[in-house]
Amino acid sequence: MPINVTPIAGLSDKINDVRRRTAELVNTEILPNEAVLWRSSRGAGHVDDERVDERRESIELRESVKAKVAEAGLWAPHLPAEYGGAGLDFLSLAYMYEILAYAVGANVLFGIAAPNSGNASILVKYGTEEQKQRWLLPLIAGEMESGFSMTEPEHAGSDPRSITTEAVRDGDEWVINGHKWFTSNGIDANFFIVMCRTVDPTGEMGANGHMSQIIVPASTSGVNIVRGIGIFGGSTSDHCEIRYENVRVPVANTLGLVGQGHQAAQDRLGAGRVYHCMNSIGQMWRAFDLMVERALVREVHGGLLKEKQFVQGFIAESFMDLQSARLMTINAAEKVANNDPDARTAISAIKVFVPAAYHRVVDRAIQVWGGAGVSNDLPLAQMYLTARILRLADGPDEVHKILIAKNIIHRYEAGEGWNFGS
Ligand SMILES: Cc1cc2nc3c(=O)[nH]c(=O)nc-3n(C[C@H](O)[C@H](O)[C@H](O)COP(=O)(O)OP(=O)(O)OC[C@H]3O[C@@H](n4cnc5c(N)ncnc54)[C@H](O)[C@@H]3O)c2cc1C
View 1 (cartoon, helix red, strand yellow):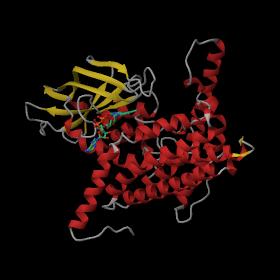
View 2 (cartoon, helix red, strand yellow):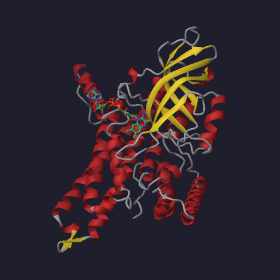
View 3 (cartoon, helix red, strand yellow):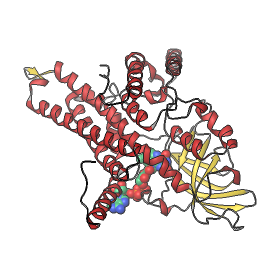
């Protein structure tokens, strides 16, 4: 069924207009064509003539939807107009993402596929003019792919200070050595943004041992992709283990200032967490619609599922999960948009609450659909895996709970209570 989008009272006309136009494209161009749009990325096996034709049809359809998105002025909405984007502000993007996430792969058709979208935003903010010409513009044009290489197998990803990948300055070059894994999009990437600890024996670049992000072309000698890590029983994936062995890149490939890497990562993750939660909400919304639709028509033991109280319980609990997750996320988004000092706490709260609620809603939708729920005919199985990953990625739940508690305790120690009315 189409996503049911109407204007939201109290929201600006601009945001309501973005929502309306996004929903129109999702409902007319993407949802009815989901099976064909993504056919070429499903399944393996021998490639016969029929399959080649099917793939061509999928690719052509994707290109035609992308053209309609561009025509509607919604292509790459996260990027400024000068780089070919729609230049939407933070709140407009948040409200747009929940609608996009309702349809499988709609984000890709709107030019906002991770990790390219996050890398593009970082390049816009920290890149030099030369870096923008060489990496950003081809990335936006879809002529290049990229990866973000931060997590290391030997050190806790939830404690970024433990990273040991080192970039040692040698003249006008960095020499990078380190071991990373779970670098998404690693197979296709033309370049990686690599989080390194920089060491400059000349002292010229300053900030020794501090985190810096460095652009590394994938073709550079010493960038060794060990494997695509199989996840959830799959034999491989595009989440790659990579060894950087004596990789030499120009010092001019440093993104931002030496020592600014941690700040750049925070920029990426902070706002990104609100977007990820709005994505989760769009997917919960889809799972919810699918669950209720099925309950209306599926007959079991002499009655429809909608008449069974177990299923009514699933519907009611999922409604409450979705509503509370959505309202919490919108509240956090508004705090970010208003530079509210409590935004950090609100972001950590949604980072923990929303993926768990998403997990519960999808779990119930799968149960209602029975075997079909775990099949590839529906998007539910993939959503289930995504929800599980979100509980440990982007800072695991425990780290965010610690931060929430610390901020609250600090407030009470200062003699104030928490202001739930803000
Ligand atoms: C599908 C997928 C894609 C990814 N893509 C990327 C990518 O593109 N680039 C990239 O750099 N990384 C990526 N990652 C890595 C991801 O960011 C890390 O897995 C995540 O940050 C957790 O780090 P870790 O795996 O080292 O777990 P660890 O840091 O070892 O943590 C393990 C567990 O310890 C617990 N824990 C941690 N801290 C505390 C604490 N203080 N108190 C109590 N318990 C605690 C948590 O339960 C946590 O799950 C990806 C991961 C996955 C699964």
